[in-house]
Image (cartoon, rainbow, N blue to C red; front, top):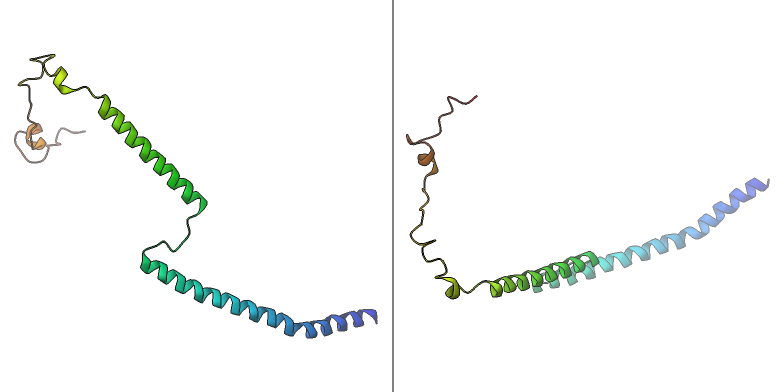
Length: 127
């Protein structure tokens, strides 16, 4: 008898609370629908302004900081190398004949250089 009353009590409670559960679900649906519509128009405006639709994540901010620091380091390193390079005016006559008139013009067609008959390489002797 007690189990029947428990079952009837749960059933009656479910019937009485079901309109409130449906109301909560309906309000949540309306809330999410309005949020979707508002975010849609906000993102359309951002898109046509040329801004990013998504907010940067923490990892994106860290990556941007690392890339900026690396770019600054590379610029400082390049400036240091350029500024520490010897001035050619001071050293141009240190070895007067070492590099003069020793220019070698590379062959423009390496196939002709390696195979005087022209055309493709002959692989008859290849294993």
